[in-house]
Length: 265
Image 1 (cartoon, helix red, strand yellow):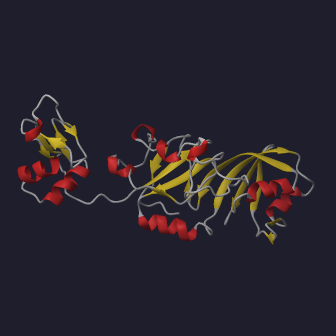
Image 2 (cartoon, helix red, strand yellow; image 1 turned 135 degrees about the vertical axis):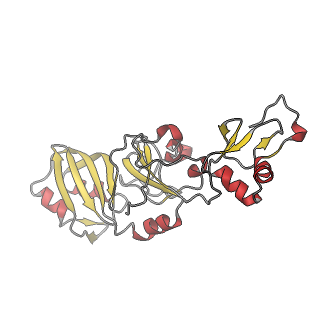
Image 3 (cartoon, rainbow, N blue to C red; image 1 turned 90 degrees about the vertical axis):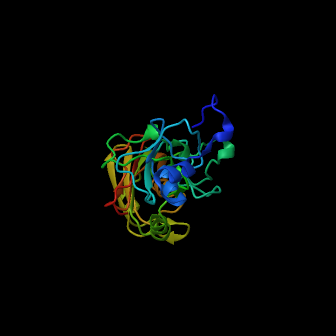
């Protein structure tokens, strides 16, 4: 926050000003700033490197503490047309490569901003700029698909998703076209092969005349459309509703919320 009408040579870093004014260490000053606890001329500033002038008023929010900001996990309802993957261009659930950003698919990460936060996001959490940095995604989803995607700064959550994604049950709603073969629903539940290997039992049920619910573990790229094709159906849309015990509801497309402290995948 710099006033161009003020001389620039007397400006100092905000963290330095906070440390001098409130008698704390430079690191504590940085924590005050990054935690949203510092006001400059009445406005919150979260960049410890911001420059301030002697004429500007610097204050601490009531109750502000110089504490480390815990890492957060954000749950996003990704709309179709956005890329959410681990990098590169792996095959997706439709059996072909993800559209990369160079091919025009924008990253789902760009949907994570203050204005798209879900209004009923549990207990109050002070939204900080730092919450949108260093986020990683370990729950890739096809560009054409929609539904739950997880972005996290928390190494424990990242490790859980990376190590256990094969054993976490995922629930999807699959829009299909065509006419299912006789006995096709039973074969979807058990009896099909994929890539030359028998598939384990899977929970599949009709939600409507053109919508199937899949609940399965260890889903492979292209598996769902291949299963549907084997019984005469074509996948036209796919939406992920749940990963483990964490559900998509009540997020609308493009909205996100914080993973709550008591939620576990």
